[in-house]
Image 1 (spheres, helix red, strand yellow):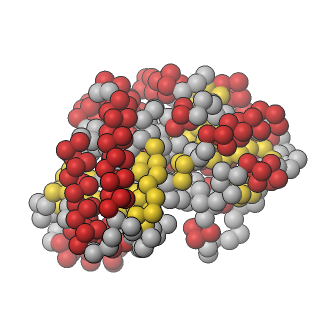
Image 2 (image 1 turned 60 degrees about the vertical axis):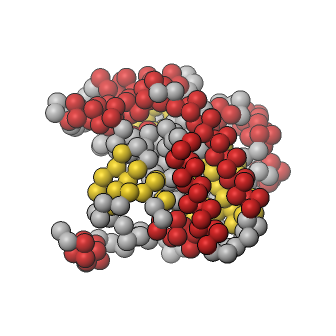
Image 3 (image 1 turned 90 degrees about the vertical axis):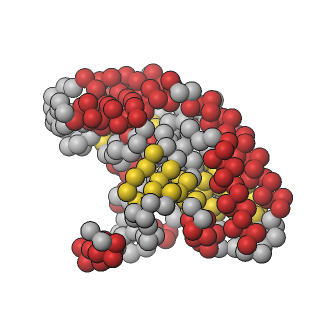
Amino acid sequence: MKIQEIFDTYNNYIMPTYIKLPLIFVKGKGSRLWDIHGKAYLDFFPGWGVGNLGHCHPKVMAAVKDQISKLIFIPNNYYHIHQAKLAKEIVFWTYPAKVFFCNSGAEANEVAIKFSRKFGQGRYEIITFDNSFHGRTLAALAATGQKKYQDGFSPLPEGFKTVKFNDIEAVKSAIIDKTVAIMVELIQGEGGINVAERDFVLELRKICNDRNLLLIIDEVQTGLGRTGKMFCYQHYGITPDIMTLAKALGGGLPIGTMVVKKEIADTLGPGMHASTFGGGPVICKAALAVLRAIQKEKLLTNTQKMSEYLFLKLKELKNKYSIIKEIRGIGLMAGVELSIEGKIIVEKCIEKGLLINCTHDKVLRLMPALSITKKEIDKAMNILDSVLSNANIR
C-alpha cells in the first residue's frame, strides 16, 4: 500500500479511537524503530511500557517462532506446559500465590474487582485514587480516578470511591462497612508519574490488615523491572493481596495476569471467571523468555544504573530551563513536569528522531527499554535539550 492509501484506509475502515501521529513504522530492534521512509527513531516510550526489553528481543522472537510451529491455541479446560511454567515463575518472583491469565491490564483489573466482590460476601466498595488509571472496561473505568475518561459512559458500575492520592486520612474517612478493597498504582503513569509515598503505602497495608480489606496493587505499567526491581511494591517492603500485571510481560504480545495470595486464591472457583485466550501456549512461552532475559541479561542492575544517569541528565536540563518545574519517578519511569503544554515539545522531539510521550498536558513521560545505554540516553537528552533551546524557553 502507498502511504496516502494507508492513511485513507484508516480513515475509512478503522474507528477513530486513538489520537494518531502520522508515522508508519515497519521495523524495530532494541530501542530503535524505522519508519516507512527508512528514518530511524530512538524509542523512549515503547508502548506505554510494553517494550521493557525493547523491540523484537531475540529471546522472545525465538520462543514465539518455536512455539507457533507446534501449537498456537489450546482452551483452558486442558493443560499445557508453558502456562504451568509461567505461573510458577511469576510466583517465584513475587510471593506465595496463584495466578489467573487473561489478555490485558484492563482485564486483569476487571477480574481483580470481580474477585474482591466475591471475597467480600456482601462488601463490594473499592477505594481508588485521583489521577489513577486502571483500564477502559466499564468496571476498570469506574475505578479510574479521571473524569475525562469516564465522560459519556454513564451509568458506570457502582461501588467505587475515589480519594486524594497520598492522603491517608482521606482513605480512612472513605472506609465504610461495605468497603472490601483499596486499589492503587504505586506510580501513577497516566496520571502524571505521581509516586506513592512510603509511609502512605505502609499505612495502606496496615489498614487493610486491621480491617480485613484487600490491597490491590496495579503494576500493569510498573511491573517487570521498570522501577529497578522486578515489581514496584518491592521498594516499599510490603506484599499486596492482589497484584495485576500486563504490558511488559508479553514482550510485545498481549497478556494480563492477576496474582492473588495463595490463602485466598480459591475464592474464585470453576465457572466463576474465564478468558478464552488467556495464557495460551505462544504468549506464555514469550513471557517466559521475557523473565529469563531480565534475569540473564542483568536488566534490573542496568535499570538501576541507567536510572541514576537518566535522572542526573534530566536534572541538568531542569537547571538549564525554567520551563521544567519538577523531575519525578523511579527507575526508568520518569516524568518531566513543564510549566507549558508539552505537546509541542513531543512533536519537535519526534521530528528530530526521539519518541516520547506527554500526559496530563504538561508531563513528559520517558520510559526507555531496560537495556538502554548511556550513549542512547545522551542522544535522547541532546535532542530534548535542542528542542528546548530552539524554543527559546529558559
